[in-house]
Image 1 (tube, rainbow, N blue to C red):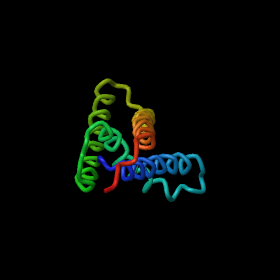
Image 2 (image 1 turned 180 degrees about the horizontal axis):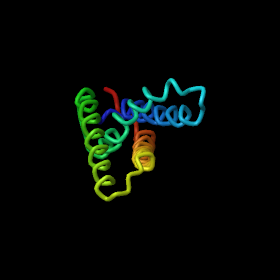
Image 3 (image 1 turned 90 degrees about the vertical axis):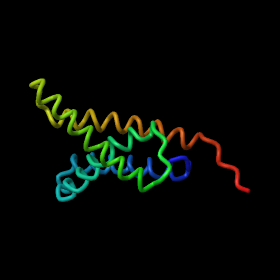
Image 4 (image 1 turned 90 degrees about the horizontal axis):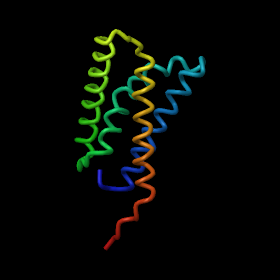
Length: 120
């Protein structure tokens, strides 16, 4: 996405999703919200983080590719830890989440620091 404002809002919303998931995991009262938040985070965060490195023009295309890349990243990493015999899915989720948050934060910082486009 080349629009800095859309990039800023998208990155901020994904980071809020990650924070909400962490809060839902930490607080037992929010247990009913965990599956939905976890599904949304697993389906969006890794792919969205990777797409911060690849320019995608259309938002709809960005959404679809983000979901597909997330599913591919989850599948590939799950198979890798399974074949290596170190099956720790929570650790894997934490590593994927931390890497996603790091890339999204870097992109958010870049969107904030980029100059506003000139309007004619």
